[in-house]
Image (cartoon, rainbow, N blue to C red; front, side, top):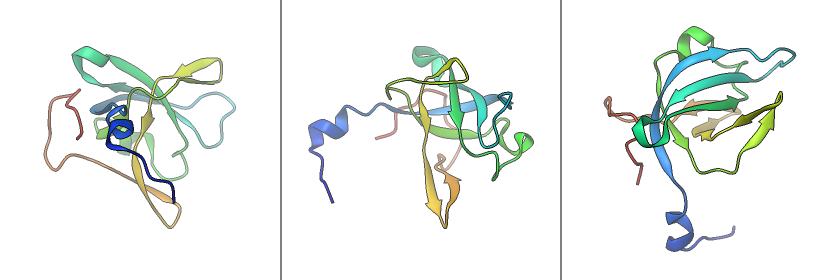
Length: 110
């Protein structure tokens, strides 16, 4: 397995955000389009996530999640995805990484 240096790890900008809106992109079978409030500095970001088969829209609304905000953007359905939510993978099912208790949106994960 490859290792990374501490300096490489420090390049990752991981923040806590709250899911404010969930929609289904037309024509997608697995993706949700999430609007995630990542705090004052990082703003509301659009994040596409392949979690439709595991979570309902209602389950996601208002959930605090951990987001990699400085991931290079990628286009989905002619729209830029501005981050990646982080989750554990248990038998192929994503389990969100979340703070132990509610925190302000934009708090840095170290």
